[in-house]
Structure formats: C-alpha cells, structure tokens
Length: 233
Image (tube, rainbow, N blue to C red; front, side, top):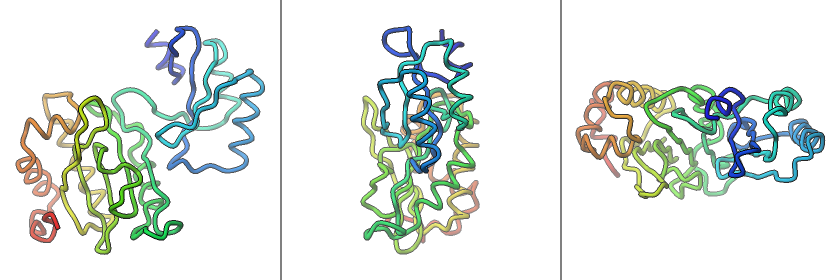
C-alpha cells in the first residue's frame, strides 16, 4: 500500500480504503481559479471533507484509489510533498506587506525558499517556517529551520520540533541578508546529507552538540568571519 500512496501522491486514510490528496499551495496563497478547480473536483467526486491543514494547504479527503489520477488531472495543480523524507511546504506569515508587526517580507522570502527546496530529499523530513518578526506566527521556533524577521535582517534558528518531543529551535545566525539565508540553508542540507544518522535535524544537532554544529555550519558557509555579528542578541 505504501507504494500505491507514493505513486499517486496520496495519503491513505484510517479506513484503509480512501485517500486524501493535497495540492501544493506555496505559503497558503491561492486564487479564485484554483479554488474553483478544487470545488469542481470535490463536486465531481462527491468529496465531503475538505480540510485546511496546519501546513497552509487544502486537503481533499475521500477518494478511492481508482479516482486518484483523474482527480489530479482535473485539479491541474502541483502535488504537495506532504509525506516522506523531504522538505515539506514552507509555512509563511503575512509579513510586513500585510501585518503591522512585520519587519521583513516573509512572503517574498518564504516563496523563494519553497520554490527552491520543496520536495527535495533529505535524511528525514524537514519543516521550514518564515515569520516576518520575532512573534513567529509561522511557528518558526518549532521548525527544523526557522526564519524570523528583525530590523537588521533575518534570524535563522535550527533544530525545532513540535512532535512528541517538543524542542525549541536555537539561534544559528542573526542579521542575515537573503543571500546569506540561502547560503546557510544550502550548507545545512549538505551537512545533513553527510551524517550517518537519519534522525530529525534537531536530534542530530543534539547528538553533535549545538556549538559544534554552529561552528561547522558557519565555517562551511564562509560566515565564520561574521560570527561576532551573528551571535545571539
């Protein structure tokens, strides 16, 4: 059954008979045309459960296996990577374009991060949150990688988790430009792939030791020279 789910990019439900499909909606942003398609598919296949997920997506629940591919074809939307050892959809807050507390453009950065990394394979699943300020409405502090906007740029935190063992992410670097954010994420992912463990990023950091992990990443990313600037503020 696992192969069937992967092949159709669908999630088997508790009844072991029906499936959910989740179109990819970067940052939870959509438009009227996409919503019309979702409604049309729900009506065509008699889907009664439509769920707005915590990952800012819309799940349509109740398809039989033989309906999956035709439903995807009718939707004409990308398929979200909702399961597996991949980078999941990036969670994004409204940022400084819409929110009075926003200090940085989290929508712009978050969409770029989603476009570059969504679905890439890693040793374990990775969740990313991008928040326009330190209030962290995109749950950045409990993500594997989180970004929080400050007056001086972006703060990058790592190792968070909201799972069975709640773990708060720790500050890896502060005062970052957009280019530095991508350089650090690239470095983190390369480093992650090299490790013998397939644990979640937070557990890996815990085993290595945060200070060692931080030193390794900043050095590899050629940001070690800016270490004093990027120390916890």
